[in-house]
Length: 204
Image 1: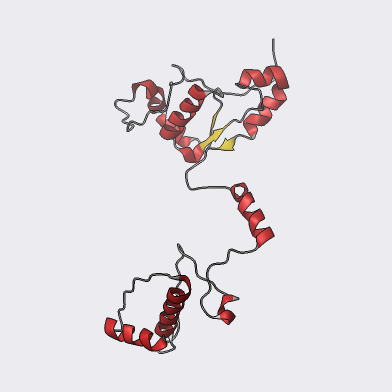
Image 2: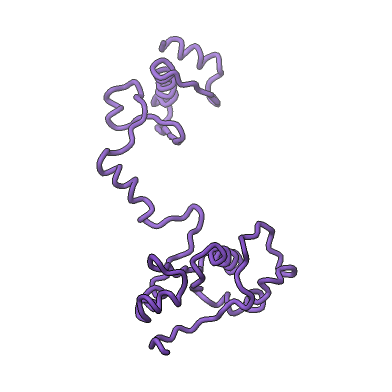
């Protein structure tokens, strides 16, 4: 029986592993995947390598092992429709054109820390409905409309010399310590510590 679709491909010669190995990859000892190292020059010339493995634990392990050796940046995975375990299921249940469509629309291999825009849909919806995240008050009502403080963020305060940057920072520390019970660790390059303490005591 012919399905009227031709998709050039290659098959792994020795099947899928049972699970992903956590061992360091050493080409000289990587006998199970020796075929990949023998094809290294060919694979390096490929901009995209499309994986079409079985949708089961062994297939997932094979996909991960291949991606680790080829490089995840060029790996794309075929995603099967609901109820399909492999390419043959797609042919039987949906036809040849569907299989070609899935191959053409293969998804990039996930790389830890890198996401496309769709990853942020939920956060974007929260931002649209609830607005930008608000931190704690600076202690200045007029400033709070433009800026609030939150942990895990880096705030840089700049200005010309003697414009009050240190005084402003000291006041922010004092306000948040009194109002929010925040604790501060200070590295004071310009002012001796006793002068800084005296200044903040005066502010208090």
